[in-house]
Image (tube, rainbow, N blue to C red; front, side, top):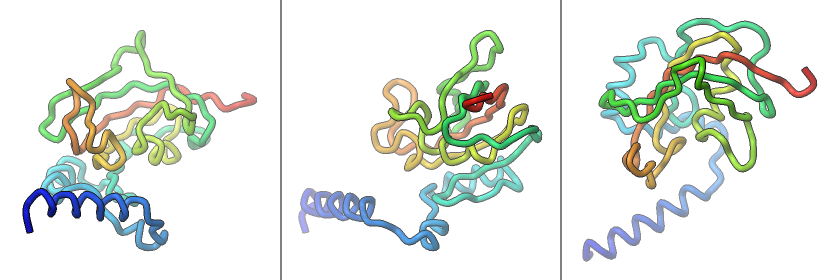
Length: 165
């Protein structure tokens, strides 16, 4: 089969598979992180929890209070790195923090962050490794993140504001 036709068929199949509903039991076993990246991440983050889709999560410093939920406004510091350790984005100064709303539409944070926020509390620090499926996917982030890149974040939750509080 000519290479061009093979690539077209593979792309179409990929689109179909992405759009098909996946039973929850099967989805929890999927790991979108490439094996080579997973080996690096697992060595860098010993004891990390493997979440559905292949996200790795490790609590470095426990937080306190209620766990973050959809609708909360969150103030955080973070460092985002590529698998090779290069920093692609960061907010590390308490004078220049990152405010966002969990579950906002349009989305204010990548899908991987949406998935791990319910595991976090104010005052906690966390390490998270996110497969490209839950990051910037095939598009990347021009000038910062290449396509299909695994992302590693260190996140510190400074403050959580819940509606009505």
